[in-house]
Length: 125
Image 1 (cartoon, rainbow, N blue to C red):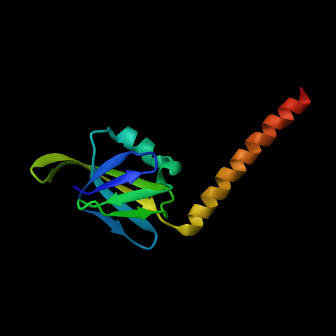
Image 2 (image 1 turned 60 degrees about the vertical axis):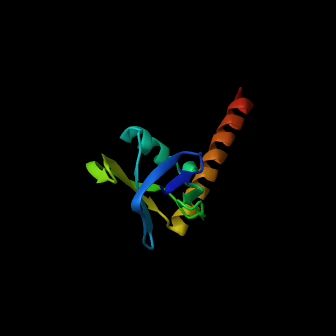
């Protein structure tokens, strides 16, 4: 079965035809034993999306470097996948390059502000 492997090592088994792409979004449809809240937490962490590997049944790998952030996570219950009835999750993830740069600058700025705040605190003591 095909799967998607996130930067943190988390893997999700894709349903058949489980990857769709547009200019601004990539959708992954997959099954998981994890609860919705845990999947949402994993996919909401943009560091987990820095790189993602699309692993085919043959073992061939495509690596995505353009994933930015989770836009939407949907769950559809009681879907027949092969011979099993399960919940299918669909993650809609932004692949907007400008959005990715903005997110990187925001993380850098947040870290710089935190470090400056700590430095000022030490100086004022």
